[in-house]
Length: 201
Image (cartoon, rainbow, N blue to C red; front, side, top):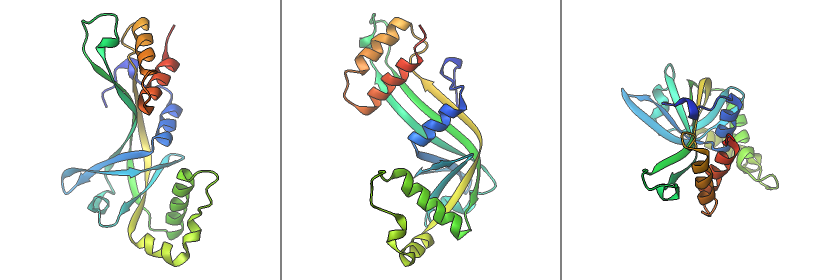
């Protein structure tokens, strides 16, 4: 990923938090000699990412023994030059993203597969939700496990980028934050918060 110096996320723990908070990722690999991608939730567990392919998805069949890329899309939004102090400017896009590189190992152990199912459910269910995966019943879960191919990806390299108008003046950054905070959309609000946290005064 192209990362200008001002946009680089230096603290790896911040990159891991982004992966956890924005865990619906795009997983890229080569399949039959061509780029292939699946949009998929990935759960961070230490230095591993866990996920599941639908078994009819051919991407998993030759994914081992190659370097794959998981892209985590954080908040992003349009930045209008009308918010600046001058009209001599062009639009841009502010965003936060993380790229994780590594190797995939297919899960063949039934217990590890069921643990990964459980961890994913616990990650997304509300803390007070009465739902528990085991309530679905052993027979149902056994059928489910036949329809998916679980995997884990060992993370070998992480790159994080936060493009937050750092290449503009402090005054301009503050003007952008002020405008973003007026927009009642989650991405704009999150980018404003990121920009505030990264202001250098």
